[in-house]
Image 1: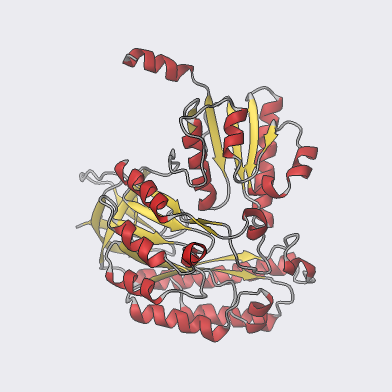
Image 2: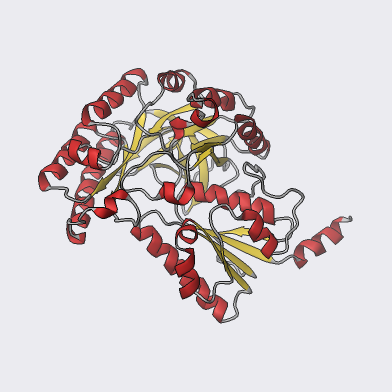
Length: 442
């Protein structure tokens, strides 16, 4: 086919806009779906541009996320009704969980699909890809900048946390075979990806379902050896059974970021027990201390839940004191959301919405001050920074201690020096704010 003919064919293709809500695991699903559909359509991710087809990949994790998903669907439903788009498809966690009620109430939506219905979506859109989507299909159209990508190493979860509906939506834990992950990672590296961000519902559980052993350390070590990969970042590590050899690998391998995402949720013993976390206060503090001792300079990211059923003022203050004592580099907090069919749903949700919001704000005000103090101590240091984008008068990048979208950013004022997106630079930190740092290239 001549180049001119190819351009005409591409221009004749209809456009699909895949709108992704929720977590990075959803983002990977959207990118896999895009890899399947690009055989018949031009693909856009989260675009404001006109498109003939819109696919909304929904989140159903907590109340606020479900509300955002519904609002997004309603917005595109109005556009569908007005004839501004030809077809509206809804998929993902919310659609998986509430399929019947969504179909009943949202007539402008052409079809609803669950979390794994990629081939059915392709069939509806009359796409005949070279290879149908298989359980561990690795062809993707990235929605991230070309230099970093998320790598989902497992699906589902075997945990029974009382507040979480993910196992109800995504099913039991299923590890992606290592050879498939290596193939996907090598493919990503060949397209310019330099940072792999490993994600799962329970990262350190990887491999248990394959041969009964945790294989996360072996996997990370193998991925780090791929040519072109310079950073590997670990997100969503459950505190139970955190492997000692993984701690040693993070401490010793310069390609593995000294960054651990360890969602803890709470610290009060009664609440931890009710949450069915399988860990107590002493075990939690012991793990944190061990990691900090063995990985000097490690940055922790964690998340907390406040307003859990029965959470007293004393229990909340215990959580607040724990945060003060531990001084996590990164921390987020959710207000408890009662989710149908979870065991906590049977408990009396007796903390008012107003009190939940007050407690969320109190925690984040504390964390803001902790973050500022930690950032100020970085002034004068020189750090390796990966440039993500240009924004207004700044180049914006991240260090090994920062995940995209949720953590600190390094802002470097535009000068005569031309910096390249997706490249690493040594940057001297000169100023610090609550969640941003400023610097200049050394």
